[in-house]
Amino acid sequence: MSTEQPAGPPPQVRWAGVSVAVQGVAGLVFAVLLVARSGSADLPVGFVLGEAAYFAVIGSALVAVGVGLVRGRRWARTPAIVAQLLLLPVVYSLIGPSRQLALGLATGALVFVTFMLLISERSREWSMGLDLPDAPR
Image 1: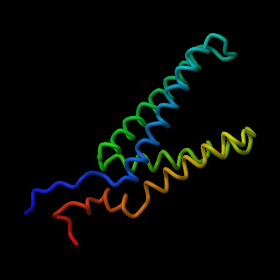
Image 2: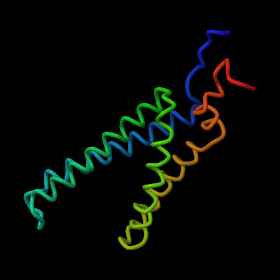
Image 3: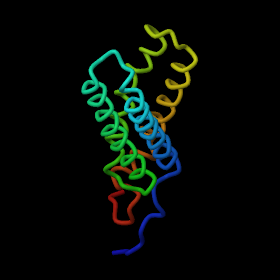
Image 4: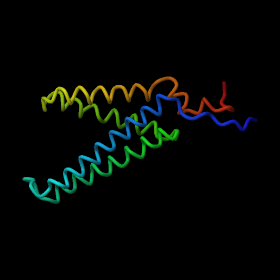
């Protein structure tokens, strides 16, 4: 039995990890902006702070998943894929009802590219451990 360790995740997994971490940072920035503007909102402050807490939790989780992908943690691939799928309605909302075409297309491109990186053949093989020296061939 060989004691060799694989070199790490394939480059597409690392790039997807960076993208997911950036998405998480965007969620955290949005949470901070919500808290900063909570006093001037038309809604009760508790509602706005609750929404900010939600975005802080989700943003923190996405940063953790992104860092996990960059560091080669196989568990992080599935939550990253789910996050990309959950962002599709956000993209639709930006393009459609919100009529923010440029932002929607940019977000959609980021989500699409990240999703494709995560479901590529090399990413799948890596996530299943097929790159390990003792993996079945």
